[in-house]
Image 1 (cartoon, rainbow, N blue to C red):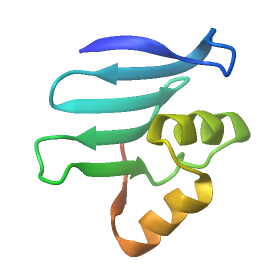
Image 2 (spheres, rainbow, N blue to C red; image 1 turned 60 degrees about the vertical axis):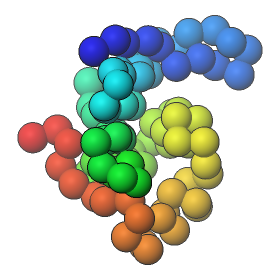
Image 3 (cartoon, rainbow, N blue to C red; image 1 turned 120 degrees about the horizontal axis):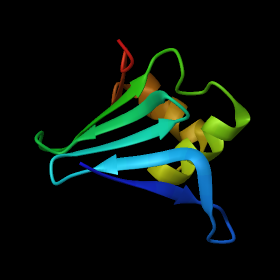
Image 4 (spheres, helix red, strand yellow; image 1 turned 120 degrees about the vertical axis):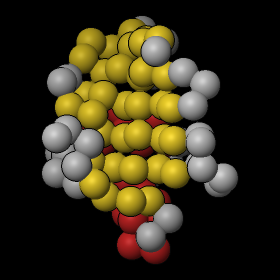
Length: 91
């Protein structure tokens, strides 16, 4: 696994907002909580969101949206349709 900070709109690394990745998995972590897991071993890829923390705060939502490349409204629609799975990513 490799890790890097997400970047602000000004291109500056943001503290406590991380992307962890390798060829098969991609994670978004906000502080010490895993928020998103993308599993590329599925075709199409499987997107899992932490059921408790996926929309925890304004900051988490901002960087989750950046990580996924979509708005909170779009993420909610994908949860509602079953395209995204809510699960416990912090067990």
